[in-house]
Image (cartoon, rainbow, N blue to C red; front, side):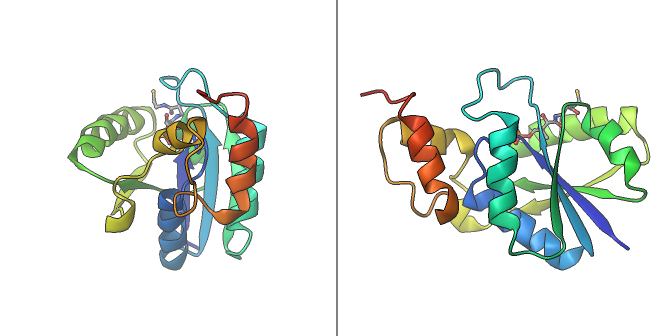
Amino acid sequence: MSIAICPGSFDPITLGHLNIIRRTSRIFDRVVVCVMYNSSKTSPMFSVEERLDMVKRVVSKYPNVTVDSSDGLLAEYARQFEGAVVVKGLRAASDFEYEFQMNLINKKINPEMETMFLTSSGKYTFLSSSVVREMARYGGDLKGLVPDEIIEDIREKAKQWRVH
Ligand code: PNS
């Protein structure tokens, strides 16, 4: 059985993330979406539990996708799934540089771990969790940026973060 791991901080999950997860679920028998910590993102909008809950809700329509979380290293996490491939989305050349470096570090930790990249769908190239957070802080329309099911969660959370 082929297994893919889609890791990310998902703060919050966007339609761009969901597009990568959905496409990955068509290629692999099983997909594990893993909500993780990114130590360069120090003040998340949502707790890991909240992010996990939102991701679970939006991927529940995909029967071969499950959701997990880990506060450890991705390369260590991947060891439990023999032969699993990490799948990440690439939006632009700037993503590539970062991901290339991450891939080299991960390979050093776990040489067995392979990473594959799916190019992002053109309509989501501009989209990131930070764009969503910024929009939410200014009370902008989140439709078309994140799955409908979580718009209310973000609106509610953004009340504490609103700029004005
Ligand atoms: O959605 P993001 O923030 O781009 O995802 C990045 C993430 C969470 C996949 C990355 O930061 C990660 O792998 N975090 C776990 C810790 C780790 O393994 N770091 C890389 C080696 S130092």
